[in-house]
Image (cartoon, rainbow, N blue to C red):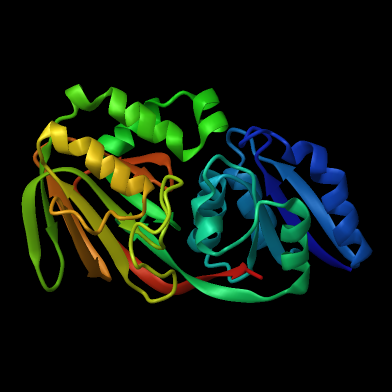
Length: 292
């Protein structure tokens, strides 16, 4: 009998995954797969790493938001594990699941994993220490994401970030940034930069013509502009027209170095990360993920 590990976050999204555990275990058991649930809790990384490196499990399933996926991705990458990862999205935005067209239905996600088809996806790495799947960002939207009320995010999803950003426009301040690639150097006062591994970040779709398996990162930069122009930029974010704006710069590369005149905290897959300066590179097709 094959074994698999299900790592779940009971507090993600509407917290409904807990009520689905017995159904999920039953479905895998019917296919002669012993599924071991593991509840994420503080300080559990060492235990999960030990479980996944002992060779007993054929694959791992992550159920939660992008932060939970990031947690499992980092364990797999840091331990050089080649086992595939299944995704049962249960967070607020589920950016990486959406990038891969993975549905939110638990039943459909189980079907996808049991069907066994995988793709190889790119993984970003910051300073050769911290890995990410969907995005690495810094600036005003990032500060907003950290301060947006959890209940508001649960009820409104990505729209909550938009509303919070509009409410804080008056206090938004630009910062000087230098982004250096092998081919160019960008330096300007900006409000936000976001490194993407697909078309979605923060719940907003089609931000760039980016793909998850080309070995390249797509960087979106929103330059400093008049505050009166910000609502139009935010509107273009939710209308999928971000590239058609004079205040938006895009860069495509496989690696870059980013530094700033200020201490800018990064958001990595929606979770707080290190501060600038950092070096970022993409590892082409570094992780296997179950897809439809």
